[in-house]
Length: 173
Image (cartoon, rainbow, N blue to C red; front, side, top):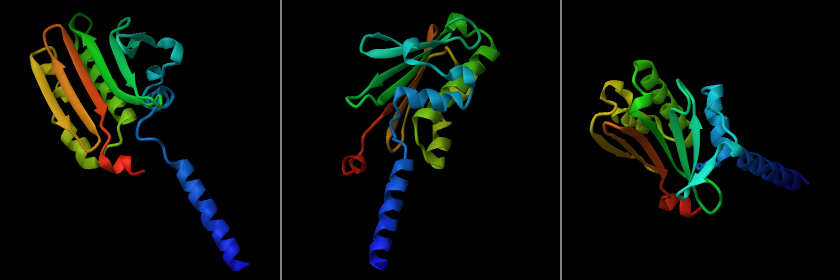
């Protein structure tokens, strides 16, 4: 009897712990929920998204109307496989607007990625942290265990891109 009770207790614990884990690739609802924890204006719904050229896009009005666009691609299971944040130079003229872009990209990264503290500190080497370099010619990359990041900029646009990369460890699960 003790063995049966112990077995049931262990089985219950395993199911409870497995239910607590979140996917390393969120769907749009989970991404929106996580982003809204940083700022309530970062939340979005399915009806806010539009599809174009194989990706879903959402405009956000942080400092002016539709000044930042979030783009997402999805895998076969409807989990997000990549995100991109884009801004136009004409809509990012002040330090406040550029800081809004920086805050938004930080919220997207923290909501989309599960990074170690070391990876987070190394990610800060990208020029996303230096708003004075925005809209100059930049192309920088960084790769973490499960993610690739690209920060690119020219005189017209600035783009922050992150994609999920499945590693062998993920394939065994």
